[in-house]
Image (cartoon, rainbow, N blue to C red; front, side, top):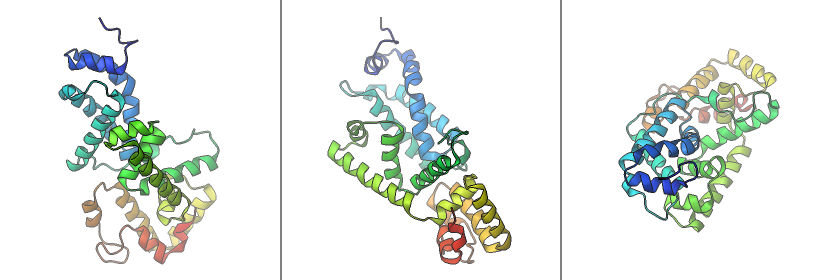
Length: 260
């Protein structure tokens, strides 16, 4: 008789594969928070992340025979999570707006400068391509080793190290580069300092086009597919699809949106 408290993930999965499906609950307790962090960082939607965690363990039950002895359970679960996430996009299950206020990147009572810096980092992370954002999530937020990342991505460790290095370089560039898009993100998230927010708000009161751009940028961020983003109209310049994303228009026409 297996003792779940002292058994390894691999021992538990061996019994699950043999038919003792009640032990899936043990794996859920051990891994659901980690899976939720992955889905939250990729979707920024609380309900969708919770639903996808449930989907992962449903797939564990359906495909338990595919688990191979000698492999770690953690990377196997993340592989299932990646597939569930990709399938969710294809079926358009993640069309709800992003819930930016949930991201507890800093304690509520922490220094405002630190909170602003972490908010800028989160915004810079969102600007990366999905595959680069994902590998940073694996390394930084899930604490996966390079060997685990390589196993999850189906490549050798050297290739995963190179991908991670490039992704971190791009994240650093995105974080340090002045970005109107990031300033708009900070304004919409409420993470601008009080003086900067007041200055930004005053500017919006005197510029109808910039108000339109902020509104459109908020709608653009809530879209989860390129097609949906292309269908947003009109652009501030009045031409469908001409200057999307809106930050392109802002950076050309209104330098004031680059505050922060």
